[in-house]
Image: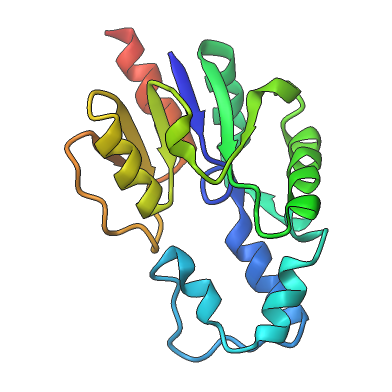
Length: 184
């Protein structure tokens, strides 16, 4: 089976790293602010701090993997054809090399040709997409109605309700589900 795995929000806790960098650059997170939509990060008040974080070549290097994500990715890679499908980021010249470096450090078992950098995941063919961004989940599920989308549940992706979209709390939980389903 060909499995497409998103990076940020699925394997990598990019949001925590981003918010940490935002605060380090003088940004203040308003009381009551919550990340309820993927793009709500753009509404943080300090544009100077936002710009500094986006231009920080260490943004991805500092990010931590979600608990159990590397183990799950290793298992998926061993038992299936896996591609990490991820957006370039705003500063492509910084973010693409940084993402490669991150995976070289945390998931050496992945080969260079297992990465697809695109801001349009609809062009990538797979049997299962594992994703956290609502817009991508909904568009991919609609286009590929006979394929599966495993939504990693995050505060910013509550609005996904298609028949071929299934919620999971983590990539590790996806791995456990696939292990069970392969027994039958």
